[in-house]
Image (cartoon, rainbow, N blue to C red):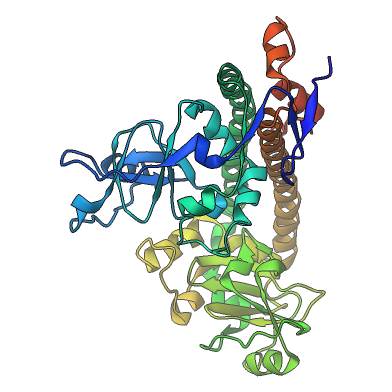
Length: 437
């Protein structure tokens, strides 16, 4: 049965069920300005964990929070079911509190009126359409600034009858739990696949027949070239790329993380040695110990904290050296050299002494080919799982928006025993779940 609907003047919500209202935000939430009491606990709002007592937040995250010991008597009081607009408000930072306590005066505290169910509005205030509309109310488009009540009040809110608000809230809890379970399953699969990838690489270098070929990295190279210790000048229209540490992950080059530079900058930064196909680029810091092959199809130079391994083709295959960088022996060497810190600095002398194996070139090539093939299969499964998660999150978001704006008639779904879950139906029509090989 088609639900009767009525048009609204709001661009983000062009129509509503006829039984609903488009209510002024001030009639749904008031601005709580009550000063805190002497026994109020300090609350910390965050997108990841909602609103928690500061001690609980530090425990769950392992992060220390700077304690605001001065001026605590001037903080704002918060009651359970209040909403706190915190400093990531433009990313959806409107958090419902289940605790009484106090927050900084930098935050806006919203108190729901008798016409509003906090259970329902925890979904509305996180929906994509609402967040995008809220962004248009102010030009404070950066993190670190909270939306004030006067800006919040500019966006009218959908207001179903109270009984339907509660029904929608209950329905969303149940339905999104199914989507979240699917996402969690794929996240665990990705962890398993990454562990398998590490094991495959490690196993390739554990062959006892390779032990007689122990050597050092400098013997595999014509030269080990450090980067200029300056920041490359960026040229958005430049035809060349400065490779940064963020451009290198898991043996792969990520050009989207590199900087565009001019030909002049490229030549200047390559005076010590120009990267050529077959060579390896290596991160010496932040994080230390990542590597990738020099790409064949683009002109690159070294950004900061990068090293070029100019491979000697008479002694080594670049891909074989690359894979050894990710072996347990080499990674343990890096860890010990930096005292276990991924942000520690690997000096050129340490890099040159890195222990590697240098068997005959034909054996190097066979091992490199095997690892290319095996890791490509694993990487493909990881990419599919990542895409499944992305699609699931997009559908979860769209599903929430549809429910809180009346596009889904929850009353009908509740009345139909055995009706298929919309979340399940959505996942059935999405890409099939990725299964481990």
